[in-house]
Length: 179
Image 1 (cartoon, rainbow, N blue to C red):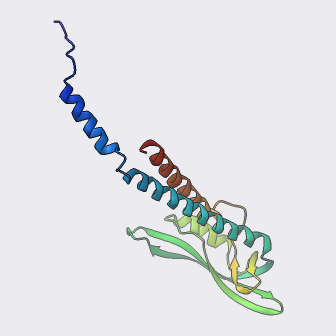
Image 2 (image 1 turned 120 degrees about the horizontal axis):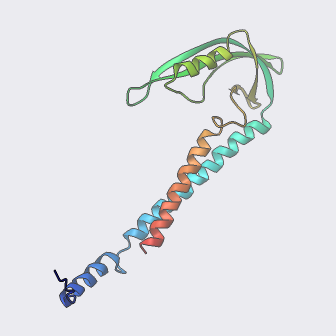
Image 3 (image 1 turned 90 degrees about the horizontal axis):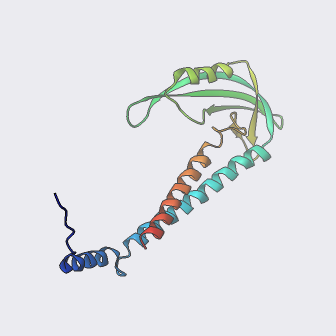
């Protein structure tokens, strides 16, 4: 069997040129718009991550500590939008700031489908135990019992920053590849 290469039909080349001009022509700015929107959205998410992260860092650096006694501790139950049962913790603390006693409820900073994880946290903060809290000097009822240099305390800025990098990267890639 013998194969022959046929010369390309000039009509095919004209069709290819027209199709290429149609999708990559100078009048088609949709890829620039899509790339720009993704890039700007990514920069917005990165900006949000910066401000949320800076707020968390300021809480750690500038809010004073106070020893607080747990008065109540329980595991809470709820459902997320797709019907999964989610668990959290509800803890009430009693503490004194500037000779004034406060009784403040606090909830866990995240919820999970793992009952045992939240039960473990509720057990750590069992009634009668004493723990250090950070409180807002402008509003001593605003407390953080889980503040620290840990993943869960900085989860929001990490997620926002990751999404920002992805969106800005996709935007830049679309802009460069389809310009």
